[in-house]
Image 1 (cartoon, rainbow, N blue to C red):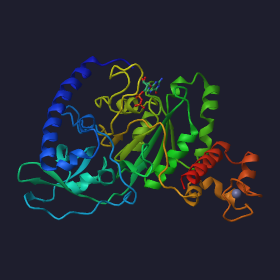
Image 2: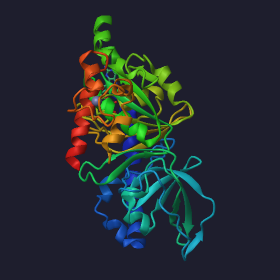
Image 3: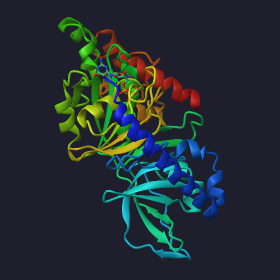
Image 4: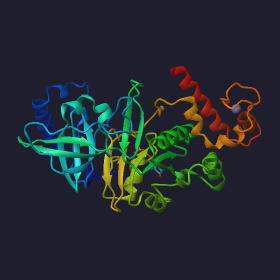
Length: 388
Ligand code: GDP
Ligand code: ZN
């Protein structure tokens, strides 16, 4: 893909506007909520507010949550003194930073500070995609009043503190897991983990295997895409795409049409390139457009509105995808392809790891059940046991 110097220029000017808004908002937050600016996050590094150039795109770090609040919305708050009107201002969060967020209200971007009780607990309280109500305070500052109940979420444990749940996106209909072939190669174990996380959060899963243009011929294509066969009965939408040749883009557009989607996957698989290919006006940052040396550059979650009307949350690449507070029993429920062979395990509570007469292990040995899936299952099971 070629560089786009014109767009880079636009980005620079929007960045300086963003910086001014950031400084202004920082001052407002500090004045109103001294505690909110001491939550430990790097406020300046994280805040990167909406560019007017984009329709409704914003970039910011994903919000995180603490255990126990995964899918429920934080409690509503009664209006406080000084609130001009709590009204019925509603919108969708398109960016969250320490102590503040940006809300899209009918196409207009509104910067809102978080009340102290939300700011204190924002690792659990608010995420990109959340529907919120907000008020205009007497001093002209908008403030979040309430986070509405979440329909779905996509979350994972905080890599630095696995006891904290990090909500990647809220209220998504579809979660698209983008993988690639060749560069980087397909990693089915990562698909397994994403599928569990997607399923748990209530969204519909789409697997998108990108860069198929790099497959030299039909034999190579068959060989490299063969590991996907195990997933076909589990995920109806498995797409082979190429942001370069355009293959599969129409199918991807159909899968996203009219929906709110989150796009997840390892960095460098082509998430931003796919979004740019779906909507050339989007200008999501890819390795090239940011002038990087092949380095991944999507460092903040962003909510974009595509030309076709879909809302898409682009996320930073995820190297590890842990699973938050999963019990061994729950784990087996996410491997429905094990159900039939598990019926012939000697023990009804067989964990399929060490028990004698295990139907699942027998099915793997007989080549009826995918060995890769089984190995992922064992690895996740071991990690759950180690955590306890
Ligand atoms: P992201 O980190 O997932 O957002 O990935 P990017 O969109 O930044 O793409 C990473 C690299 O892969 C860039 O060098 C892209 O030009 C390249 N790339 C993306 N999609 C494709 C594709 O379909 N085919 C090929 N050959 N390269 C691609
Ligand atoms: Zn068993």
